Image (cartoon, rainbow, N blue to C red; front, side, top):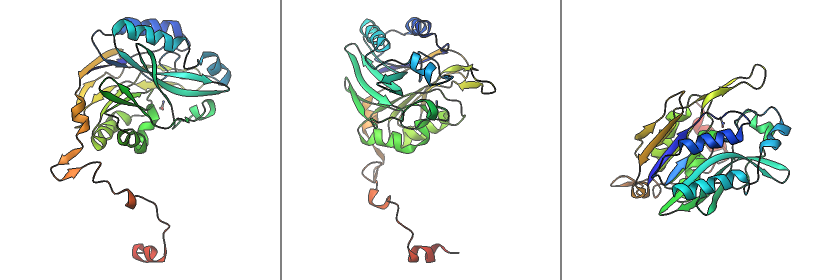
Length: 274
Ligand code: ACM
């Protein structure tokens, strides 16, 4: 599979302009193109009314746009968008192919002000078929909860498509561990540029998008501040093999019965008292 990341610089509120920029940047001969979180609208909504005015249903014009582009380029897209579902708005990611919507994910772990604007995701972590591949979706701040990538990997994901609008400095590095501890490919598509739409609350997005192999190798890496196209050729077989040594298998060696939290009883307290 040939995978691409488009590291873009969306202009807030200019959906048509952002989409046409994406169309112009689209590389040929790829199977999957991953884009940032909220890549059509921008990130820093002033309030719920503004967010609602830019949000769309999962069968809306943005998904139609990507379906047309997928048909034209014979590929699939994973991208973030503001999803309107009745009275709720989700920070969502869609997987779209030439025949339309393949999968939908609604961000579970909302970051900072997102908690005032979006409803928390209610679909869990699901894996979707893409040709011979199984692709999992998570969004930005989900990275800091290892359970998100782990759940996707245990559900069979070979590749985690990870649209992001990162502002903290740790994710790019941490995703090497997410890839390694789950033996999956990870594609973090981050945006660049900044937004200053609230007094005293300017945001700078950190770029550095990455495609990472199940062995923790960085196969492609973006700059901190430029729009870029990243490309890598990846093989699913590598993500199916969970062996670390001849005697260690990442999934078979798990001991979930010991991962349960026990109430510290008297004996445990005695043992741990120094
Ligand atoms: C983030 O989750 N957009 C930091």
